[in-house]
Image 1 (cartoon, rainbow, N blue to C red):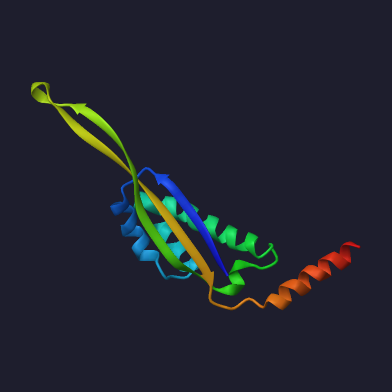
Image 2 (cartoon, rainbow, N blue to C red; image 1 turned 45 degrees about the vertical axis):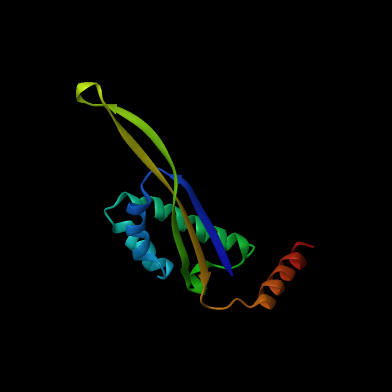
Length: 134
């Protein structure tokens, strides 16, 4: 089962973000969280929050009955795309102006579990919850 999390219009160039994304692509979520927590780059903080969101999305998608730690989640796909640019001008000598481009990017993380989920077990757990409520 896959879960997706997207970060849109992050105020950083895509090139800088890709440096960090390339280090975590294909890794398990525990290893990726450790890498992101201890990296010195600003992109690490953005990606750590995004990865935690993807994990929460995976748990929500499985109706909150499964714990992410038991199914060996890993980062299946990590994409960084360029977004729009904020264009500004800065005064320069002799009455000229220099263009400043403030770049933005979009990040997409897809996580998936390596250990297959038994769909019958999920349905059985849901049935037990309904029986206990009655």
